[in-house]
Amino acid sequence: MGRPENPVTWVTAELTQLAELLRNFRSRSGLTYDAMAQRTGLSAATLKRAAAGRKVPALATVKAFTVACMEAEHDKNAIPLHEQARALAVEAAWQHARAAERGRLRGMRPLVHPTLATRRGEISSACVYFYEEAGAPPLRKLQAAAGGAHLLPVSTAARIVRRETMPASRQQFEAFMVGCAVPGHRRRAWLQAWDNVTDPDRVREDARKRDQTARLDAIERRLIQTKVRNSGMVVDLTDHGWPGFRVNVSDAIAAATVGASSVPADQATGLRQVREASKRAVAA
Image (cartoon, rainbow, N blue to C red; front, top):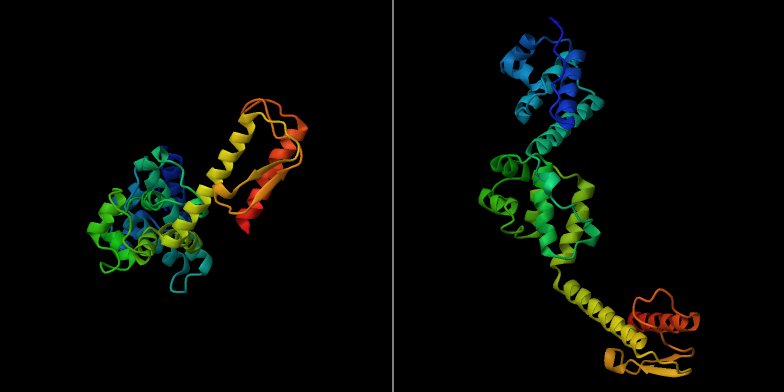
């Protein structure tokens, strides 16, 4: 085994974790760096630097490192699934270390939940986030992982990661996420977000609902500001988008000012009746 290795150099927590995972793989395999070099075709110095924790190594080096260790540990037997899972964990650790080294994720806004995405800009932001989260791989490698140039041209990928455009189609958006190694359940959620954002009928429906909500809020503000106290007052909502709909406010509808710290109970009850009845009318 040779002499013991120096302690891992601490640069970032993510890089330290990657180095420790690689060292654990080598320790289990029993390989020296020279023996590993013979298996991988890489130099012993390159492999040793990969596990030093000073700088993020190339992904190809990390993959060669882990495969050599697994093959040595299991000799010519099939590599168990749990060992393959450990190898994937090392690759994920590389992505985290690379993202931390670039430091761009820390400066980005938190990614909106896909169910709340309503604008094309949020799809574009998600693409950039996925790319940085994947460790910002070279664009040609991104293209290859995405399925080829027919799905994701390099020129288009470059414009997407610079936020100059969003994917041209649902298929291209999915290919981009595949290239960034976005997990399947996460891809499905964002594809649904794509459908919601790009479907014209859905966009129009959302605009209609926002408009009706704004009208309802305007009615409430006017009722509060008029400071009326008129039991049995009838509010006709015909002019506000609900033809023939009338609300009978049985209690007084009044309040001191918008945002007042306290509103009399009977006035608050009246306002709730208007809002709830109006919402039922919209739903109908």
